[in-house]
Image (cartoon, rainbow, N blue to C red):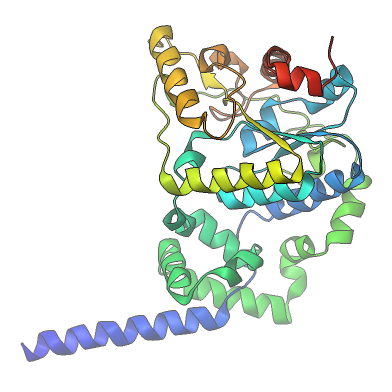
Length: 345
């Protein structure tokens, strides 16, 4: 028993020491997806550019970034339509917060949220991806977390984090040029200058500098999605935390004079896809969301051929985006209130 007690005490001491050291080194410029911060800076700038104008904001994760052409919508509706698609790894409150900051009175927001956002519990913030990015660049979020949440976050990254933190701090202090690609993402004016002077992309890349002036990702061809896709027949679970968060967002937007609508993400069509099951799942989802707002389209409308997808089951290529944009436009024209807002005949 004495050996067991000593072993247990040793483990506790090691854990306390490990997390104390790790906490003392955070935040730090460890390896992460810094382009997401650059993209957020660019999209905030785009929204600011259209400040004071009646506009439509389409916000969600990367399915919007790749699958909606707001340039075409802007031409057809003759108002600015901003693509506020970000990254589906970001927490729901971050997506909604960005949309809320961009929206003004008499604007409209459409949320084609990825299915995971409807059950984005507070505990899910401590996934490895979110933890790593919070430590690296999403430092405002890191500061809002309690010590326990930070410990949980670091645990999700793995035991090698302490070494990575130490190396990142050393490089930041004594060898900053070795991680200049990370450090430059904290210089907002430099990001915007680089964006404004970026030539049209010639190949696909996850880059803030591949966005156009309305926030759409450019050059989205060159590969095809061959993986396993989420089933369009699967019902979308809606958890209380996410529902309440969305409810607060809709309420706050309505008080601000902003209308909010929902829409579906694209789905990959398979040989076994059953239309009646897809329609059933779509009706159930629309009914569950109805206290919050209208779902503009039916899921069965956005079940698309695999050849139209780029590299994931949420990212469309150019041909797919053209089709999905037209389908979204058609669904918007069918809604009486939205049709009036758009001043359509």
